[in-house]
Length: 120
Image 1 (cartoon, rainbow, N blue to C red):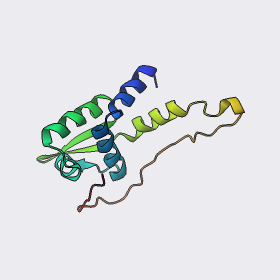
Image 2: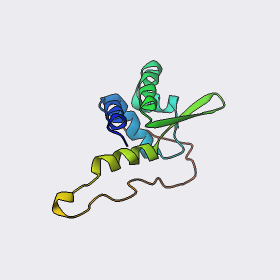
Image 3: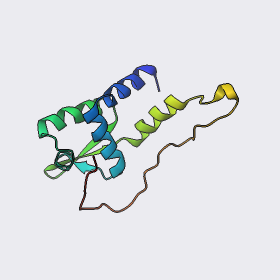
Image 4: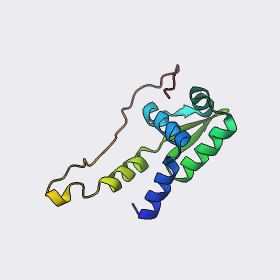
């Protein structure tokens, strides 16, 4: 990962609402959530959520897919892992030890839960 890409991702996460949205999507897993579910769960106006999702997507941290009338958003786990690996590259190298795992987050694959409660 290049410095410029890392800065873009970190800047996107350096805002309280976007960080909350991203954390909800990371917790949800690969199935993602419909935009309306995210807005309702976090108490956000649709226009506000749309703005923040656009910023997260521009940074490459979320993906979206259309399913009928709904747009589902999900965390981009490979991008998140690349950022974490970038931040922990050469971790503890001065002490002669390595502390960063190769794969930081691998979401479990499980059936989609149709009833969701979004944690703040």
